[in-house]
Amino acid sequence: YDVHHYSFILKETNFTRLCEEKTILTVNGMFPGPTIRVRKGDRAFVNVHNHADYGVTIHWHGVKQPRNPWSDGPENITQCPIKPGKNFTYEVIFSDEEGTLWWHAHSNWTRATVHGAIIIYPDVGVTPNYTYNAEEVIILGDWYKENLTTLVNAAAAVGIDPNVSDSYTINGQPGYPNNCSTETTYALPVQEGNTYLLRIVNAVMNTEMFFGIAKHNLTVVGQDGAYTSKFDTSYIMITPGQTMDVLLTANQSPADNYYMAASSFAASDAPYDETNTSALVVYNNSPSSILYPQLPLPNNTNAAISFTSQIKNSESVNLQEGFDERIIITVSANQLPCDLDKCDGPQGNKLSTSLNNVSYVSTSIDILQAYTRGLLGTYEELPHNPPFPGTNWTNIERDDPEYIFPSQGTKVLTIDYGKSIEIVYQGTSIGNPENHPLHLHGYSFYVVGTASGNFTEEAYKENLNLDNPPKVNTVGVPKSGWIAIRFVANNPGVWFMHCHFERHVTLGMATVLIVRNGTTEETSLLPPPVGLPECS
Ligand code: C2O
Ligand code: CU
Image 1: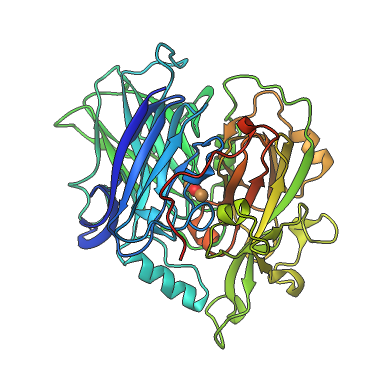
Image 2: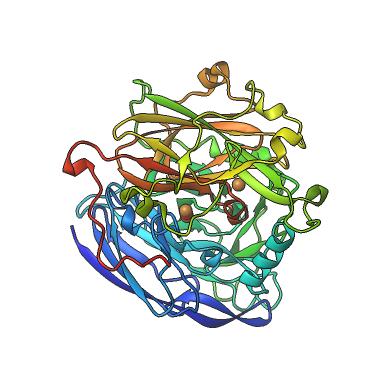
């Protein structure tokens, strides 16, 4: 394999968007940040120098890092933050990933501006089962006019979600028709007849997105660093955390130009950013017109489901053998009593979220150290089943005092090496039900079934796909529905599992998967690297 070296300087940089200048945290002064390019199985050493005046960590989203949680990055899970003025070199170990992934800061809300794409080409001499003339990274993001730390802290103080962003962005630009943005709209020049591989990343903080291009079909060929079977579609739906590889063929009239655009998919009544962001597909320097795509409306759940249900693995995989353990995890929005007299959340409470009705509490020493050093009492085991009597999870009264308040704790799921696991994520009716993009570090997993309503054996049998389930690292748990995933616990370590809506992980929708060492050196953790940031 090849070894690549990158230097990431984290620093505050001035940018002007939506007519206003502000300072944001960047890598090497760029927003979005630099692209990492490797081949399957390579290694990248990324030396991160922190010139911010607060601690930051970086995560390599979707890179499995076999036996190497030391370089995975989530703050207080696998490491303590890189302190101001310090640096740390991450060793990013690629294994079977191919396609597009991304990296992002994993400390509080810093990922809003600290993120970039990771492109993983196949082995030398190997080609995927599609061809293209050129490739382009398309990163969906958002722009907040206010200082994000101020915004997030103010909301937390009164127990509510922070304000939504002021605009979405494509490759850092809000684009037409947002204020002061038409001139700087991101542009992709194309040549009639050529095919472009768009490597799309949803780096948006809190919203699932629809994306499409006027007049053009897209051909989906990959998701989350794995190949999918090819299919054509006029739009995609992509959750925060997900990446999708799609082909665009420039087969429309070259007299015109075309917008690509992204807009919210919002399955609940939680507030969302109502702006559209756009970028240009440029055939012509003096077009007769510029066409804008029609995207599904934000509440169009059917459009989202009908897109997602078409995603299949490019190969057949054999999962007929079943699994050793099924873990059922409920995914809920909750509330907590206010620390003040009264908060601005529902009934004067503050908002919370949970997995199996436990809201994750962060620790000051990271879980990886606590685990490897045997620091008892840092964390406890999360029940492997929901704490509700019965299985009618989608019919719990939304404000039931018994369940609206989750318990709070640092709770983890511990699994023996080599076990094959099925996890069923089940949305509940507690609080304000919505979709949740659940992400697992250290693994990708097969999505073997999903439906709305309660998980039952009958619903499971009816919706099971053990032949060509897609292999992903982030999956949308449907509002008041369930989704079942499978993986073999063959990567020992400490791996964060959480909703990729930042407002939900902040409120506790998280746990940690600890996979014990196997019996040999090759199935055990690598030794810790030198220079791991110290915890204070
Ligand atoms: Cu994309 Cu825990 O991260
Ligand atoms: Cu969520």
